[in-house]
Amino acid sequence: MLPSPTGASGASTGCPRVTRLLNAASRLQLVQGLVADCVILISGEKLSPQTEQFNPPVHEAFGVSVRLSSGERFPIYSLAPEAIICVVPGSLTPPAPYTLELVVPQQGPVPCPPVTLKGLTATTAPGLFTQDGSGQGKGLFFTYPDGEGQPLPPGDSLQPAMVQAYGTGLRHAQTLPSALLDGANVTVTAVEADTTRPGYDRLIFQLPVDLAPGLHNFKVIADGRASNEATIEVM
Image (cartoon, rainbow, N blue to C red):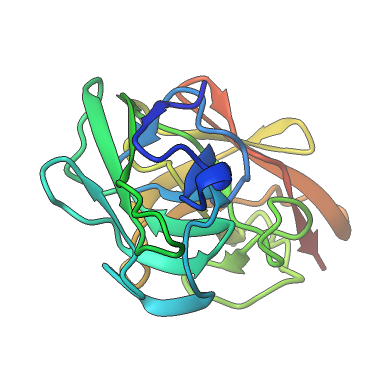
């Protein structure tokens, strides 16, 4: 369920309106609530006067900011009138209530108050990043620790192939997430924060040695919740 909005009344007044909160990697709705250090997509109307991407992320641009009631701001990766991609601050601890405030500069003759969303925090909302950003198709998979891209070598019994998959909403799971490759469990060795991109998580797992060449389906289970399914290509 979308957190309850208050404040701006929406497109009929020329004011910003939020329609959904999504995991930015999986594009699945955040039904359970916001997750600390998770990259999210705020979907709606009139959310920004301009379109821009930021690397590294910024805390405010074109007068647009996303913040908690404490004043702590969300790092912003991209802005567009219909979507904002940003990172939930790591200070949120579940289960606890939160108040999110979206500040957008006036875009019409009528001043608009900030859009306020209220809800509860959750421990995890697993999502896998994909190459085209849609939440479908080829995922962001690389050899570990070398970082070579796909297709990936399968390894052998003497030297198993280790892979790093990039996602978000994983690192605060209460137990180590599990992973399924074509429906079968694979060995997950670690989940850690990426050191260069806020909100990105890196899940490290072992490829089966008898894996056939081609495309395979991969997903993550964290605290009983499933991510989107991404494909991985093996030599």
